[in-house]
Image (cartoon, rainbow over all chains, first blue to last red; front, side):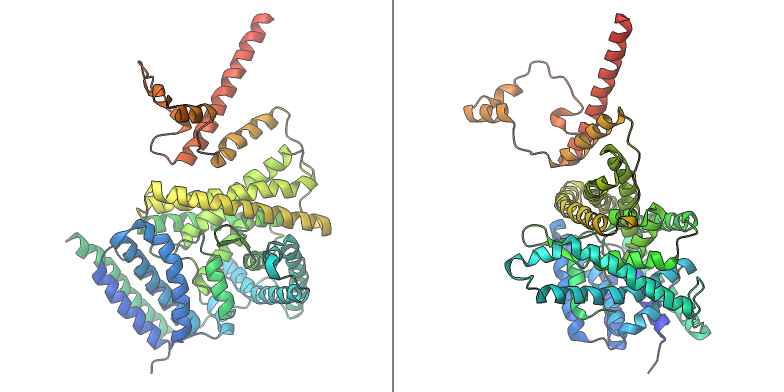
Length: 220
Length: 321
């Protein structure tokens, strides 16, 4: 079976999302083609279906809250189009081991400085989210639950101390990076596979042509 | 990067202002992407040389993590920190804050599928540009309005956070209206109404967090600001009341109208022989949402009153001299 690199899968997912989002409103026939493409993409990536359905279910509720007041066919189209985009992106995210996501960020077509900040944020984020989990466990151990549970969440001290702890942790992480040779730029190794780049260009042209033709057919 | 549970939590908590894919038209998506990319490029060039990537990354990760801590709003829904004002205050530079909030939105879109890829430019425009720059413009002004002392910063930031949240929501509504996704009379009241409540929560949390930081580590926050000139205090204060607090004005009738309604002579108000056209009748502007109309007419009315009083005083003092 065809094996695509992490970067190519991310880029293809992004291109498919952009192409889907730009389909002419109320052009159901083209939307149906993209439903098939999204399902094929999901099967190809071997996404865990159960988790995917849970996420899409939660998303559907929130999308319907936004779209249903618009009423009728328009709301239906907007919801389906957004769901396809989410199906494509979540298929990619759920098919990648969590530690590979940071690596995938290296493949983004972003300016170097921005890419560096994004990668570093991804690294720090994992530390901070663990910190939140620890703080929540500490709060439970101190019996800060029950009817006034929400007070724990609104607690400014929790967010404030999270910031102070983060500063401390980040300083240590930064010092460790400097000791390991960090000199202001992050070592980025982007795999420039020519055949994959060619495949990406061809597939991009194909899906974007499909999207643009949705406008042409609509006019006729 | 996180467990499914935290991802699901994040989905539910973050959906308030993040425009998903397919909700804005291609021209609006292109326009906002170009504007956002331009402002980001400018932000990188304006960013101080002493600001290091790890510091921005840490603050960005902190804003993201702080968004995971939710608070109840009303009717069983919950809100969370948006963080624009907090980022402006703790980073002390709107350019860096723009980069920070934009990075949060980029990561949310790419790693959490939260907020559309094609709507990323629009989301950065609403929260990273409008939210951040409204915060930056207001926070120092309000702090100076309150006397300028550092201890006034939490209150100033709290008020600013509430206003910037509503501003970002209004900007989001306008993009949806321009895209033709939703009509003005539907999306603007809904977004403004919800975000006034969320803004109150945002203000309370931002103010309280900064109060905590002020008590535990005051060196992290900016220093005292100079006081505003005496004449500017009432002007800015009045404009804030007329333009912002008027958004919360009750739509119920006043005392006389209520009595007239109860006693059945309210219709007499319509028996006017000569109808004089007024541009801001009932403190509204035709074609504009009720709350926004009240706010605009409040600001314009205040400016007109100020101008009239100013010139009358000048005229009288010149005559008496």
